Length: 308
Image 1 (cartoon, rainbow, N blue to C red):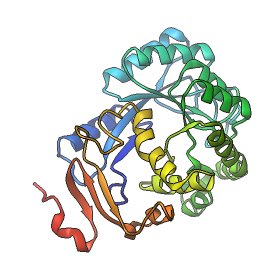
Image 2 (tube, rainbow, N blue to C red; image 1 turned 90 degrees about the vertical axis):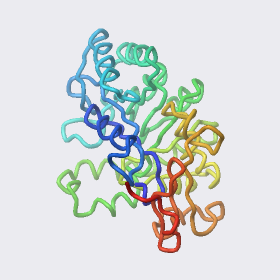
Image 3 (tube, rainbow, N blue to C red; image 1 turned 60 degrees about the vertical axis):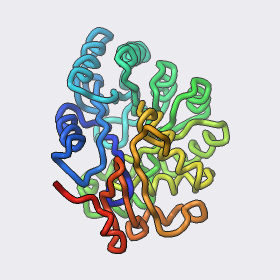
Image 4 (tube, rainbow, N blue to C red; image 1 turned 180 degrees about the horizontal axis):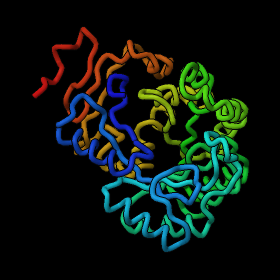
């Protein structure tokens, strides 16, 4: 991810093991890596995302406390089913509104943002009404879901990669071929997913970037956003400033300001004229993280921060 120009990665289902890796990166024990922000999962029995299993309000509170005690930066949950499970449907409800409200209350009491997987209704509106900070995916978004997100000033993280043409190309020959139902569902949602983003943008929805994809696919996600109507600058802001705010890290990441971490990339060409240049690794000439040059092409190698 770092080589491809992404200086911060959110491991959205990482849990305690990912916290250990995140700290190792921060301490310099693992170098030349993007920093990692870690979410822990709290979801219901048989839910779409797996981690701490908790059913009912008090169990949900206990699950959130467990994730926070393990050092998670944010909480991930689900309010709908998804595409991946053979024995689930995207329209299924996962957590009830009551459970989501309790989860958000407990997470916010510890300063932890909440991201909710929500592909369809009623999950999208339930997540918004409960005050989840980010609605993820929304591949089957409708007008009511958009209105509920916009009216509450929440972030929409559409993960367009998951239903994209490039995802189909990248997944050819991978484990996805053993899950044909997932591929069929994602392909079928292609138009609806993009229409939801286009409508949301016109309504003034706050957009941030996530992918469900591979390292570096955040760049492709921004390209997809431009295809949905955003300007290149708006897409870049979605992938930097907005995403930092959505994950509760805007005080240290997301913009170039005094007192923040110095993350800078140099690219070949002008992405404001053609944002697609950022999707090609050969155009990422230099990557600086925390004020240190961590990756370069051959011409900039004299600037690399030495190991050890």
